[in-house]
Amino acid sequence: MSGSPDHKRRADARRNSSAILDAAIRMLDAQPDASLDAIAGAAGVTRQTVYAHFSSREHLMAAVVGRITDEAVAAMDAAEPDNGSATDALFRVLEAGAQTAGRYPVLIQQIASLPASPQVDEERHAPVADRINRVIRRGQASGEFDSGLPAGWLTAIAIRIGHTVGEEVDAGRMSRAEAPNALRTVLIKLLRPSG
Image (cartoon, rainbow, N blue to C red):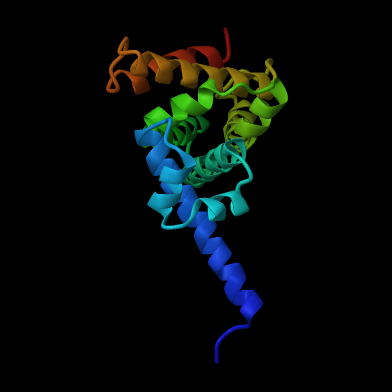
């Protein structure tokens, strides 16, 4: 016995939405200026179907950011942020996020260049920041990290430093092999308790 027509339409809509996002991520990482027609073609749907799910390119880009963020968060959670020393956990979590971002270098640069208010930027980073903040607070509680500084501030700095390392790699001023050690060295100096 088959499902109801409404159930079938919802399943088709979910499949189409997923196919559009998959195609958008592939296309925009290869060709940042790819048209919605090209994305629709790569997804195997019509342009009208794209607009039925995403009313504008901006809405599509927001959904792409959400999809990549979800992927990064899943990788960070799989890196076992609650196990082992906070120092080791922090670098596992950061590396998991960096590996996800590294799969979409052109697209990540495009997303970073989109104008965003501080509130939108904070919302965009919130799921990632929550995981980093949890590890930093754990490190502060264990004495591994300086507890005299606000965990949220240390989280924001860790994210900014991570972005800076990525930008240095993208600009060719640092090799991809050097990046993890550079990030680790700077963050350990920043997070360790003084004295």
